Amino acid sequence: MTEKALRLGTRRSRLAMAQSGQVAEAVRELTGRPVELVEITTYGDTSREHLAQIGGTGVFVAALREALARDEVDFAVHSLKDLPTAQPAELTLAAVPLREDPRDALVARDGLTFAELAADSPTGVPRIGTGSPRRMAQLNAYARSHGMSVQTVPIRGNVDTRIGYVHKGELDAVVLAAAGLNRVGRSDEVTELLSVDTVLPAPGQGALAIECAAHNASLAAALAELDDPYTRVAVTAERSLLAALEAGCSAPVGALADLLADGQIVKEMRLRGVVGTTDGSTLVQLSTTGPVPETETQAMALGRELAAEMLAKGAAGLMGERAL
Image (tube, rainbow, N blue to C red; front, side):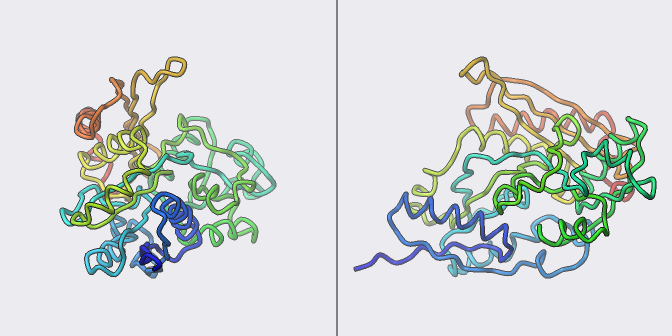
């Protein structure tokens, strides 16, 4: 008798289906059980408003979590950066697999880099599309600090739609997550991978989250085999910073936890955070370094520590109406 298929809840977008398909294959190999994808439409998929207007936090995950709660799916796969920082008691974050490239990527006309765009725009000011206030803040700040002028344009849509703005000549460039482009096989269109020294990614960017019902202990234990402990403590520190700043996933907050190694031995973790106004006129950017957290509790403490320093430097005033 064939064992009952596990039902994996996923958004319908090309990117979501690609990353859920990768997880499904890993779960099949791990458990020996068939896995079927259950496509679910979220509010974030149907709304045409910008993320800052609809709140951002949870708009891509709420419907998936509701399906889990109603036992319509057995587990769900999310882009971790879309998850609210508060974890519902009835659900468990069973696994955070090895992280993809966390950087942001520029897809520009004529194969240009960010600096080349600013020097080679027919209108004098290149138009760069992004749906992220975080990216706007850091791109504008970088341009200002280098004597360049750019116009950041808010956009929505899937990967194909966003890159299409460049191909059709409506925008000079768009900025997207490198991980998403890698997962849908479009990394060859990247004209520049933006250094994290220029643009810090969203907390959790490049990582996936695999959730299941908390009462399903056997499934949670099986899925936990896909967990990467270094990725988990890194994203936990980043999301703890976000939570301590009381900011949602549409706020202009960037964070990245790096593991610092001496040869093959991982020695320390460096957590960097940034908050800024979208026009780039003001940024609060700080970092802290400490031992690699052995537990999620220690990782959360690292995030809270850096958030407290950022708040003391004025970060709270940059996340209100002016920033959004």
